Amino acid sequence: MPTLDDFKAKYSAVLEYIQSHNVRLDHLHVEGDKLVIQGAAPTEIIRNDVWNTIKTIDPIFGDLKCEIGIDPSIPAPVRTYTVVAGDSLWKIADMFYGNGSKYPEIIAANPDKLKDEKSVIHPGDVLVVPE
Image (cartoon, rainbow, N blue to C red; front, side, top):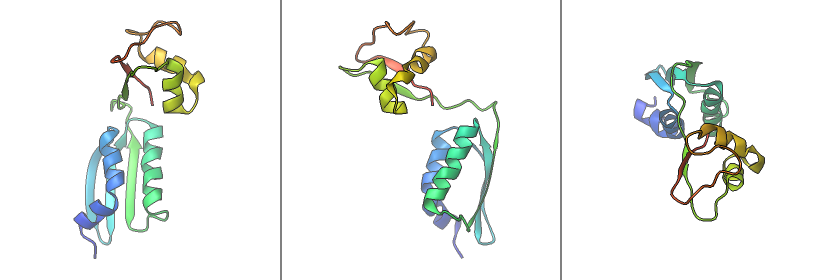
């Protein structure tokens, strides 16, 4: 029968994702021959990404019981990007979203630094890039 350490090794990518995306982990233990993960994610997107990560490891997740709810009181993780020479808002949006025309989302997330599409960015600027 697998141990908790065995399961942690197998599902390490899931546990790393949970930690890096502010998912509250309420229970992590072995019950019979299954790993039990219980907690809450700040958004539905993050909860779905936990499941997508699980499915890349074991598509039938026969040795796992995962119950992740949504708790909007949990702060969503903040993703940042440090501008380098040659960057533009379009280029940054294309890098993160696969679509440069989504640059207004970056502007909206940085009201203290960016006012509109004519705002100038400089190498070393740290911008919030929404998920």
